[in-house]
Image (cartoon, rainbow, N blue to C red; front, side, top):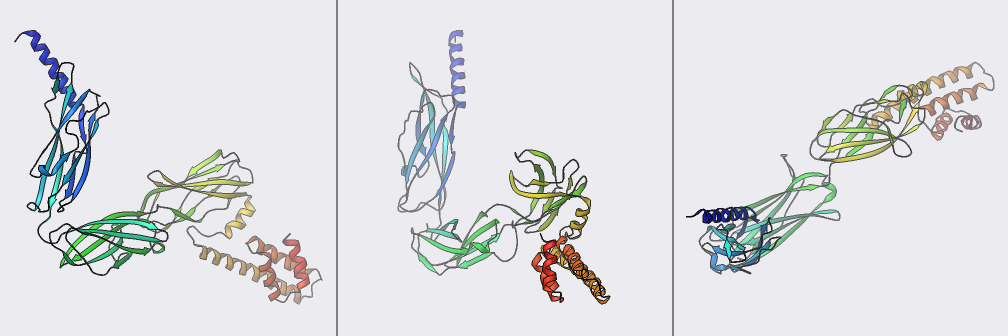
Length: 441
């Protein structure tokens, strides 16, 4: 062999190897269940990454190859590749039970000026055909969707066996993912029959209000002729959110104040590494100060308190617009807008006395407030009674009523509630009204 021919062969081999690497198939695999007399169409794509001027030869091998038809056995590849479509027409009589493999081969052929040069490689698309055993054999599919105020589960059953199903009973269940115990919702439908080769859809509906947001397993079990077939699908309803139960409405001017946020998770699974970013913004929505809470884990449907501290040094006594953004993982964020008063030390002490302890619920908070008001009211009323027993000056009752009204107002009670309490104690309606007008302007 002379040097010239050797160079030609090396160049040709390099070209072929390079061209082979430029071709591919997607998807490379598919699978179907054999159904007597059924017909279906599938498509896969031949990729031409290097945009060669080429076409492909298509062939089929396997014991079921005679039932496969290729729409175009010698298609042009094109710069963007090409789709290969094939049709399968199953016979009425089933082949032996088990898996039967069909391979659809694609052989790239490069177009040249003088001849068509094959790349001498075959790419294969593999089709697995599963033939069920003799007798009745149901296949299951499960669809889940929300329709208005209902969660709808539909089981699609097809008898791909050779015999009829005389009786089949579906049981539907919705379970919290990864948790043991009773299902969140379940239903059993009436028995039905299904002829060989036929299909049937069976649907049940659950009340959506009884299904909180979260991750679930939807399951259908089919009892048929003394046997059971089962299918489980993952399903998610909504997204994780946090309900903000309690947030500060005031901070101490010129100081650092606790700024704790109490939330409750609506999610049926635990949430990990959750934190909040707190941002003070001006009228132009520009951040003028920011900080963040601790990072904590939240159990399913649990109530927790995020701890942080608000630095009000350098801020005037004003009402601040504060954005609170909770980060729930996977790029999910939930934002709340608060309005926070910056108050002096005296008012901060009064308001703090009426505020709940960390993590307290609304019921506890109201209970503390009631106790405080009753205590103050009792002290004031005792003092008023003493003043009355000493024949006070005509202005003394009005002063006592005003003192009681101011204390009650500082603790959050309204004008009507204070009036009711004073009238129940027997004070003159005229004196009460004049005193309340001075306090509740």
